[in-house]
Length: 361
Image 1 (cartoon, one colour):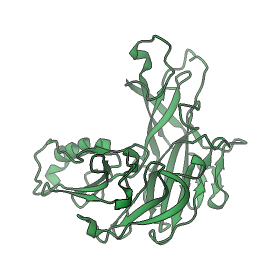
Image 2 (image 1 turned 180 degrees about the vertical axis):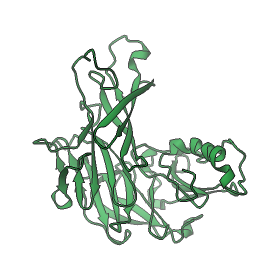
Image 3 (image 1 turned 90 degrees about the vertical axis):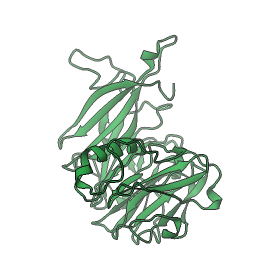
């Protein structure tokens, strides 16, 4: 990862780990580093974020860019940490009309355009029927004047969870969010955000408008976007986890079987046409040759993150939780954490930790 080129770190929760890693592992390659090895830095005062929006961190020319919501000042922030000087620049992106109804869901997603300028997109937690965006005038912005005026695209539905990727081979921006029918939707820009297509639902697990799949995305930035998603919210649905990927105007299963063309969306879960199963919900007791690596009986899954390995294959982390029996001890309520990876033929899973009580019953 310490190659001197672009380094992409997507999760704000990893920021402290990221910086410590850079100081320990990359210091010999970065001359004049102003920060002591292993030093802890307060990058995001009063910072809040949610894990369903990406990318939120990127590294460019010895500078770390990251997004969050300043929950006290009610600002959607893009900040820059200069690893050479130690300086931190904080840039509030939102206009005055976006000061209210801000919570952790409102932070921006960011991606690099062909000229290495930053494209930032954001919306409030279902408070907007549109998304907002700005483009930097230069690759290393330090103040709001380094960005275009705030623009927006109306989508006609409550919008949330912004995700944005630029694919070099297609020369297009892809924006994903939850809006129409509370499902994951996609819009495309052929001109770096000057105009957008209308929202198209990407995947439907059930016809009901109250069932809302939760999705995580990743991209190689060249020709592919990967998605992992659930049946719905684990509070209401018996969630499995599925994987599909986008490439050259089509969506595919993990093994490359074609599911749908862009002009024939959404991918609908019927007649065997759905994403490849990563984790399968089951109520069957484990057999003698099975373990929690396979599944947890009655365990409902929720996606956390997905990335691409050095071969371009997807790898992901997710959690599984159970309804705790009455009067049970806290240990029985804990969440189960999983790591899964596609090896080119099958999805492999590994249960690796327990921690914390479930977010929902």
